[in-house]
Image (cartoon, one colour):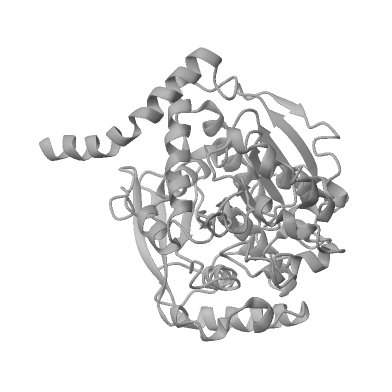
Length: 456
């Protein structure tokens, strides 16, 4: 008991000034967003401080810090978690697929910045974890499966840090969840994560005889993820489609990172109501948009800007030359025909809000069903804060979507874009939710003109 008290003291004492200032601001001036309780204001302040610190230290140290609770992450008492290994042959097959897809887009090792086919980490086992409920209620249906891809900016976190998500989705959707320990940047940048996600999908479709489960019908698989895992979800789905493989029943992104070019306004405008570091994890801030704005004055075209030799690397996950690849930034995809039904959930207060809105708007004429939900006042991946009514509502709507698109479900409506109030009421998304997005898509920072304005 004494050791626990000492440990808690060491963690909290340095945060006393932050807690005091947060308390004063909350009660003297009001919360950042109208619905934020004092508890949530404090939670946001502490999380923002922790992630800001992660962004200030070397990436290897931030990876260690992010996994401090990894080994102690509990399995919910109502769940069964089972370790699994995806055999090497699936990664080899996925490599063949990725090589063909990258070649079709004119992407080689020079553009990627590394020889991805010689990655030493690819020789290590590809691990995963099955999660299922101990007690199967009326929601459960045998064969219904979720392939879960965790968030963490493509360089942080693990299946253990996201057991909260896999448990919630297994219980509410009545499904088994396979969470994947895909390779992380910067040691294994793009396309390693997509290759591993493809490997897992192939494994679920046609498992070996000793896997312990029967082949799963793609119509019974939903791929989903949060943040970077949400972006990976959409990138993987597009790769599946482009490779001619049977597409899954649906995909879900919670606050998906769809645009590594940071082209939309909310990346800067919503920094005060989110906990992510300002402008995100852009190489520890070295590749922030405000830092590179000066370079914009020296170039004459947006393409030159993205490929300029003086431009620092923007992201850990992918080189500047491939930030506009559809499997890296699904927002740039021009044709969603042949894809599967999609659910996109984002918070109105988060930095990645606009890219989710624009993803739905720019694909409004596609035949594929796209559902968009924007939750009032909510920050990035708010589903993790299980004391929030909005979190419970988003989890339940995600579970409903999964049951609707998988075998035996009634399907989903073709298109819908709604804002969701803190008490769960829906209202239609306004037409001008993101002004001028057409000129920004596919351009670093929204384009040269936008970057130049950042200096004023």
